[in-house]
Length: 410
Image 1: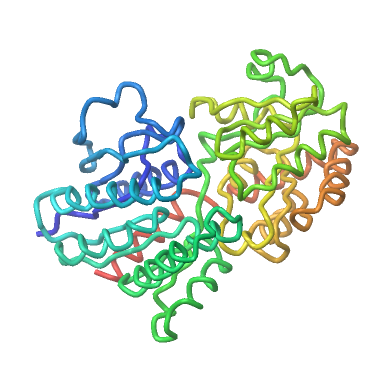
Image 2: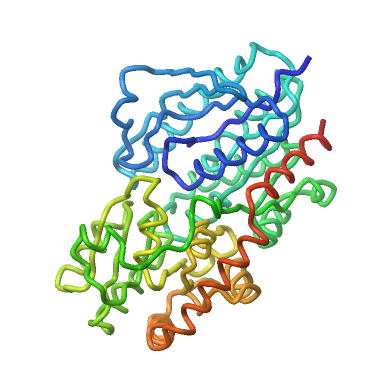
């Protein structure tokens, strides 16, 4: 008798990482379709890159749910995101520990219907393969960002030896997976180029989704504005990881040219300190850290326009999940991403916003001016985006796609 589906992922509720939100809802949808699910994840650590308050003191914590079990293990986090060696060691240690407990999730070495392993970190690919083999189950390797491509494009990884090891690990992980799920056709093309032609049919496109019940349009005059003294003027908002893959220097340049607009950067990450320094003489740029997940709709409503900037070359290896949330909140998207990739196509199809080429300040500023000067058109884009995600990006549709894949492989 099968023990159910085993899921190995780096984040899970209540951790507030975007990939944790995604996997939490996939698990809920699989459970609603009748699957027993056993999650092996990390202790919550995303917000401050340290084990969250209330979760310290134990290497492993287990809990039983109505649909299965959750095992949380130590992620060995480091507060310096630029220390790649330290991060690699932490990912490897976490992957090893997660793999050990995934062998026993739902019953030691019992046959499973499937093992779903999420990347990044890339190390979970081999972890998933070992667990799937020992539990006589197919492996589904879920790719959120194509690594190491994104890190190489941004210059986060430049050491030749590290790049060679990462590329080897990537190729091997694809080779040993029974299915590789990606978020867009661009990512599928990228992954297939690294596989033999006979394995191309293992790559499946299953997009991310947004919970349109939890995230919904709200009035722009939010409690967040009041708490942070933002006032009732127009707000251009970037919310999410403040990292080097996002072209947030465009936001600083736009703030210099649009001095009557508040630019809110909400989040944390490796690039935040340098951005704050670059904006130190600008009164219209506001930095704030992550807020509680139950206030996400409120935060999104605070922004009149939301920016999704991604450095050149990354549109084909990453699909910013924040785009779906912005559209669900009924706000227009102003994207600066490689043309012809997933986000610009989505905006064209939905009418939910505008897009320009990446890393070019002047077109970016012109796009923002266009949206700011025509609030009626911007509002209509927000409404169109909301309607599109309601029709095309529901959690139920994504859960059903994973259910079909598991049954096919089994």
